[in-house]
Amino acid sequence: MSDSTRHIKLVEWSEEYQFFVGQCPGIIGPCCHGGDETEVYAQLCEIVEEWLLNLQRDGQALPPPTAGRGVDQPIA
Figure 1 (cartoon, rainbow, N blue to C red):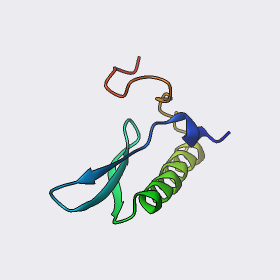
Figure 2 (figure 1 turned 45 degrees about the vertical axis):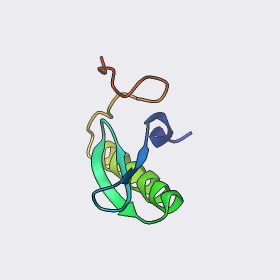
Figure 3 (figure 1 turned 180 degrees about the horizontal axis):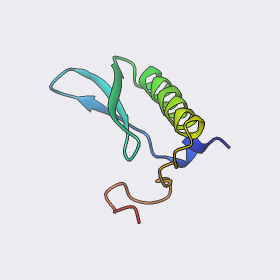
Figure 4 (figure 1 turned 120 degrees about the vertical axis):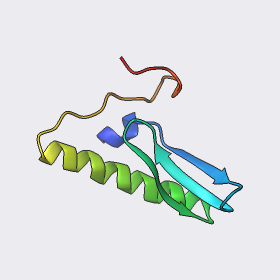
């Protein structure tokens, strides 16, 4: 299991922009968009994986996992 699977990823429809927007709370805000929800999710997964790999490469601590808990709950 990769580290990115331990983080919640959200793909939501934007009424304002009329496309899907992907983000990963605690890692990266809105970072990809498009007309196909599945494609946006795939892009988001790649972006999060790259983001975490860059943190590891640079010797930085990884953000705590968010999977399995509400995204509106504070991360301790």
